[in-house]
Length: 134
Image 1 (tube, one colour):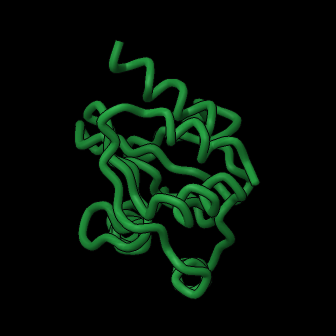
Image 2 (cartoon, helix red, strand yellow):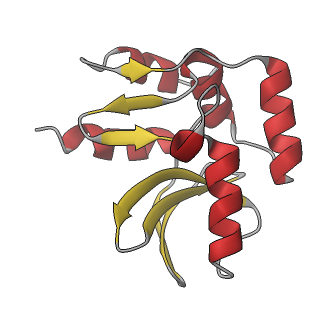
Image 3 (tube, helix red, strand yellow):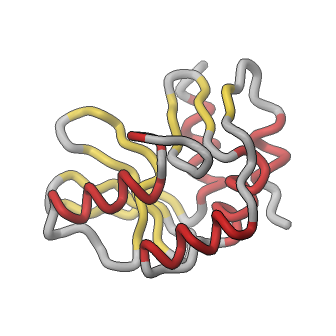
């Protein structure tokens, strides 16, 4: 198991959904036609989806803009530049800026057709998100 669950556990004032089941996880991957990286799998199995310090990550066991399947499918419909092997981790809600993750766990910012790698892992991105609160 990755270390991301312990990092999330240490967040004060964490809001979370209920962790997802193996079936929900497999159904989501099948619907999106990709495999989630280990850190994302560990995170959604433990927490479903999370919100903290103005940061909201997509996940499972939630509906609407935080549901990883719904928001990823919507972004793929709206943006022809959305990479095939990626899913939405966070919608910044600012000028079309979203944070996406690929099957290897690398994290990118995507704004319309501008794609930029910002972190090697979801855990590294979590560290950045936590630093925003300081």
